[in-house]
Image (cartoon, rainbow, N blue to C red; front, side, top):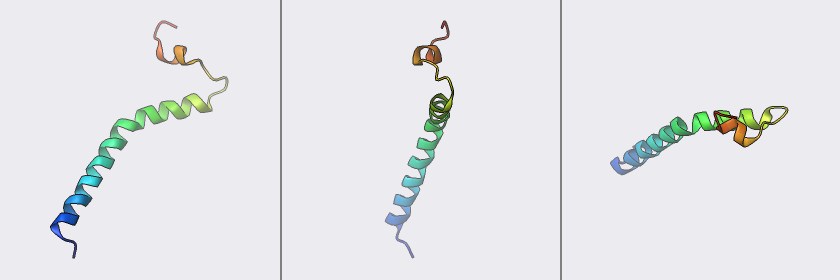
Amino acid sequence: MPSEETKERIVKVVEIGRMTLHYAWIPFIIYVGFTRSNPQPSLIKLISPLA
């Protein structure tokens, strides 16, 4: 059986992984769409609402 210290480490790793996935999901989708689109838009047009 795992010790309490091991259980705490596993819980902490899972929490960090969940938070990373939560905050990285949308930028990842934008990145994939940006790199796979044809023709590839300029970064200014992608970010600026005025372009």
